[in-house]
Amino acid sequence: MGAVSTASPTRLEMAVDPGVLPDITPEDVTLADTPWVTIVWNDPVNLMSYVTFVFTTYFGYSRKKAEKLMMEVHEEGKSVVSTGSREEMERDVQAMHEYGLWATLQKAE
Amino acid sequence: MGEFVRHRRSNKVIATFTVLEADLLRSLAAQLVELLHNERAIAPTGEDPLEALLDFSGPTTEPEDPVLQRLFPTAYRQDPEAAGEFRRFTEGGLRDSKARAAETVIDVLEEAGLPGEPTDPDLVIDVELDRSTALTWMRAFTDLRLALGVRLGVEEGDQDYWDALPEEDPRAQAHHLFEWLGYLQETLVEAVG
Image 1 (tube, each protein chain N blue to C red):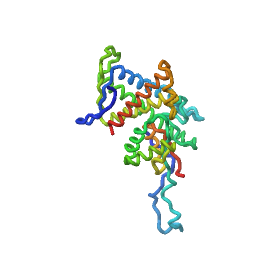
Image 2: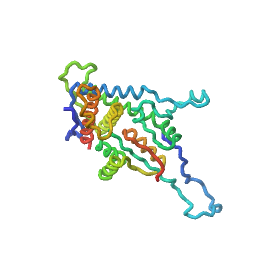
Image 3: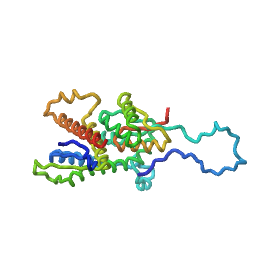
Image 4: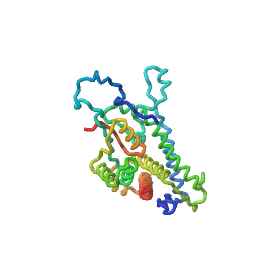
């Protein structure tokens, strides 16, 4: 299965001559892009037990955390279930679709 | 009969179906496979006809069938271009994976003795699933329930509506099937734990 990569990778491997380092402060340097989130939306078909099962099985979350996220989906209509790079979130969304959950990704608010 | 339990000693998940139940499951799974292959994932057509011919990647637009729309949701709600790219890289693989899961259900039932044309109504089919196969069945049951749910227009909190339908209404019968799959799924999740 082809991995989706549309965001540009953070380049850490560039050789840098210390003599030509630009005048920057640590505040200017961000290695991570704005985080992205995976959102699972409520649907009238999937069972609560199954959604909890998917969260524990795929994300490795504790039963308690998985149940909390599942209840958020159920009662509030959606829940942020994971956070990370865009590529990671695309992987998570793809996995959720494979499990039959309705998932989307977006930049963290 | 017709529910999943965990067999303590082997740690496998087991269920016994009547031949009628097993035949019904096979027929639903076969329909899902057909649907997944039926409306072909259409590759994008570019400006250049040669380029279009040589582009074997997946589709970038939503499937037309509402069931397929639900099985392959749009991943970016506010970015159609990113959504198209995501679909192009994922939908083909997801279609194959979902079809394989449904085929696994069929294969297991047939290996457990479900004949091509069942004639003996008293035949029972014992299935025994290891954890990985049980997860595959769970995904297949989910897709079958999503497909039936979309076709029926199932909504949150609509139980009274379905209960009020006359028994002879085909939609009531299809909804019974939907509920039966839900019951199977519930016992399967419980048994896998």
